[in-house]
Image (cartoon, rainbow, N blue to C red; front, side, top):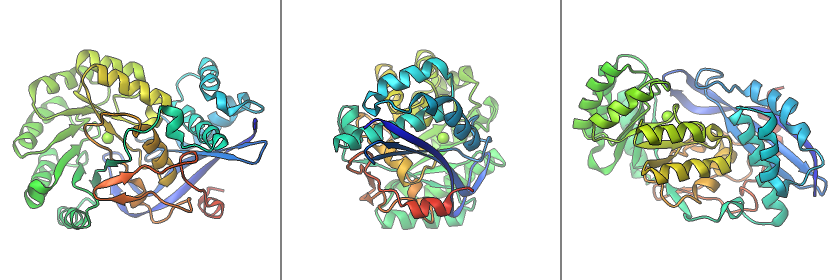
Length: 370
Ligand SMILES: [Mg+2]
């Protein structure tokens, strides 16, 4: 049952429509998949995603693969995956940073460890407190009319009633008007939040957030650059609408600083940002102790990576802002034989063994970068 071999795959999956963010428009999403085989023939799988190569964050798919293969996986051959906690601790002593790479490997170790025991991964993380979680959809077609149509259709299908708008590209005040038009059309039947992805300076934020707050928007995500913790503190103090830190809230140490200086009153959790599932739980603990609201974030992972997120988020009792685990709905195809279920405005936590996803290896081969 010890680790026999490890493979890291870069996979590109097409999306159903262009997905416009401040730093990049996604038409095909790049994910990195880890495969850890044991000596008995069981395989642990995990996934992390990045957005637009190096444009969203420092971790690129290519760097994740090379760093996993060069610095992380050689430590693991012949080791027992049940000791994933000890193994990841040992890796942390020789591999600094590299949160995405470490999250990817820890995920595959946990999937394998859970499969060896024939239990769901969430049972290795304390057990689930939710069977399903609220799930927001991101309206990011770039066109107000299309976004309104999309929101109304999703409300009708009972898929989503929380909508996030990506408003970091272009003129800030035009974007604010775009949001307010959509809010007017969807009315009180849905909650509208915005993600600025660091695009504003503080003066623009002061002006735009005042309009958004008056217009009934429910949350403002990362309005300022990730380094501007003091500016985020001033916005949090000034406005009553919740201010969420995402790009600025990565390691548990950053989250502690945000909690201490109130550089936001809510945090977007992401397994890859924290460096793994266990670190995500630690991050949630810091936030809970400081009274910060929590959100189960996404880097737009496919079904596998979404299952990873769901397994850890399901163990966190208070997720005041629900999740945005809509990734699988944005993809034209998947690398798993089963898929994530969405029903009654929620995303369902897949039961195990492991993360509960069955890999379709033919599809994995088809979409894999050669
Ligand atoms: Mg965000």
